[in-house]
Image (cartoon, rainbow, N blue to C red; front, side, top):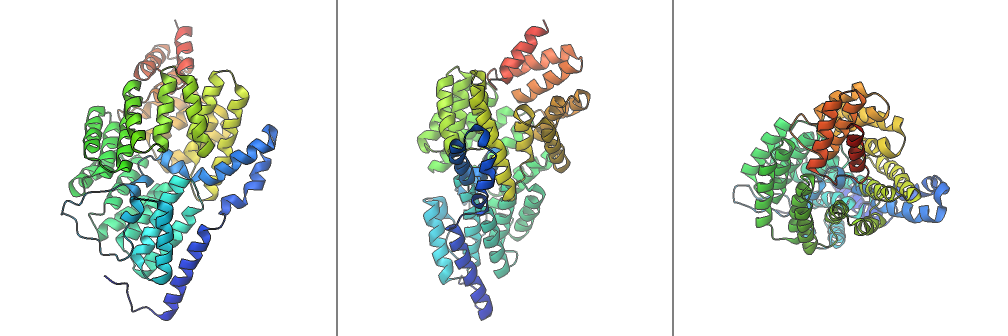
Length: 489
């Protein structure tokens, strides 16, 4: 289908100008880069030279937050999907999204930009460009791409209102920014236009999961599996089952997905999901095997590299784990690996190095928020153990006001605990386990809170369960759990 030709010359001119603006913006520093000198001053206490290097990495890579906090959200753009003949063909013109999924993302974006200069009314290519910017923010960690993605997707919708690729793109963008009600609304709009949109089906599951609406997410996963079975849907279907305590089904579905995966990106993605599932069950040997398979397909895949380091640490290979995490945070200074590396340093007695890692989390949070990312959950978890405890509680309460998930319940419970409000914390710690989801850190937090409220028997059971489920869940937490059990003998 050719682009529409009934628009005015003024629209042509505006669209062409937008194409020029988007291209130019891709070559200029984003808002986060312009803020670097201000944030750099915050790091003077631990060395301006080290801070500038780390701060620059944080500027470039802060946008990867969404990939870590919502592991199954933004990445769906890069995953292939089979066409089983049940879905209608896409009606949008323009450069095919597969060109971006199968090769050099940056080169694909440049091709799209050039195409849109020549064909500025191609609404399909504007939608593809917007999604490409979301993916670029995830893989490059450049949060300035989020505003660019929003502009491109808005341009697509201005040219063809309610076209489903652009609506699905808005859903992916909102999810990447942790704006889950907005993500759900856009996914629903896209599905009204195209009930078989794989991206919209996936984003609807993600949004419902992250809003804590697990029964609805399960139904949405069933619908998606009927309409568009494939790797993106399989992985989400598995996670929904794990959240409800059905680890066996989750594993079976992921193994099925891995058996059908052929593209390197799909293999890395699904093998890592299997590794993470094994890790959460304390099966570190299987986890390492799955991470090895993922890295054989893509040796740069961040979640696999991070998972491998955690499994190595759990098996006692702390030197390899530290080396692996150091390489990760050198390229991707994100809250989770920063805290994990800091805790490994702290467990080894190097508190100065640990403090350096924890300090960078604050910089990341500021950068993420400046580019429209809701970072309260990351803030709450990092600050509760390694930062401003009052700030951790404010962030956890704010996140709980937005969404009631097992993760936000655990975060609020722990933030209340570190602020001395254990009786208030206990109901949230219990709620974190209410769906059947089992996480050793959740069990540890609950045990500590139970002990603080005088429930010694329950505390002993929870702490033992944490160590039985995953004895290496955290270098500091596991040690604290063992110490607490010893003290209660």
